[in-house]
Length: 469
Image 1: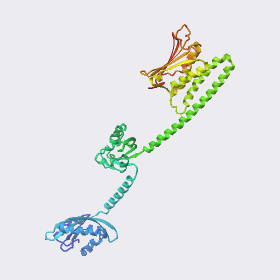
Image 2 (image 1 turned 90 degrees about the horizontal axis):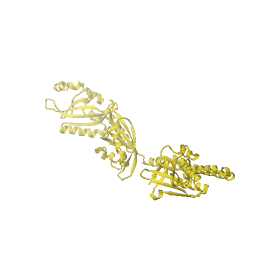
Image 3 (image 1 turned 180 degrees about the vertical axis):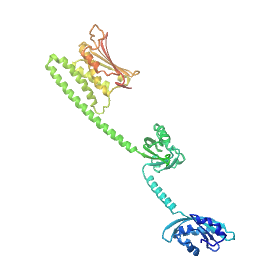
Image 4 (image 1 turned 90 degrees about the vertical axis):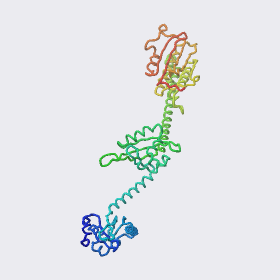
């Protein structure tokens, strides 16, 4: 029996079936008047022992927590209601956490009584401790890694957590994001901002994502960021938050650029060396052809034409093989072609170029440099070959800035075959070679006769040439 028969017993009959411990305690005689079965289960002592020794529960309290229990008892006596959590050590040696609350009750006889409700909260405390330890480990990792660690709402409208690395990378206080979740976006480079904002608000809740963007720190420095996000779902499959990391990859980007520049420099050096060797080999070929032409006068005209063509190819490789050359200029090609043919044919030529007067340069497409050099070579060589030996050859390069094109004319004092009519398709071998070499787009050739003589005109437009004015 938990207590003597009487009105109080009937009043607390329901408590016999409670899982929590329940008791009534007289503040006057310092004795328990009622104890339910759960008291025995929690404390590990039979109820009779507790009735006989009301101080027994206090004796079970762990030494470090007894001060808290004394404060609980005092508050109960003074205010009538109190609560406390403390540890006890049961008879079997187990240590348990107990939460107790008190409140005054009226037994109908004027006895100053209080009711006590006690709950075994050992498992709850264990979970709380595990959570604290887990959170401590999480913070220890999150707050010591170089990357910014984020936990945010799926649409980015709320930041639940951001690690201290934000201060270091963004150069701004992390606390500002809790009040203004999109504050970090304001630091993003203007060219990247719209893309990042769209991703954060619309796409990062769909699937894991990775993106790169630039930010401008508070001190003005531009940093490159690699941002990764992963949506987190609840048991029902709904995305409840997004976990993100932001890494400063500025140093990595710098190393990548340096590696690319180094690789490009090595490639350019190798290409220049190859071009230089090809040019030298071609010059060796022209030397052998000259020797053969000197020994066989009957075929010297044909050999000279071949020499001019080989020289035209060698010109390009020579230009591309020069240190620091990254673009082939039309002016350089023309000068080399005119000089080479002039020396080969022992002819003077008048070369007028508008480039310098207009402050422009004409860049030839690297892919078409060799065909254009050969076309120029044929134009100049044929003009020398078929023109008057006494007349000086006129070569004019004009630039049409408005139409982004150049027009090269080579005029000799000769006449066209067929009574001055424009030659039909085919013509001589030189014309056939020119037409076969002309690029399909951006290059046009025309041959006409005027009062000054025969005029060969080559018009070059993008993508064959680019004007730099």
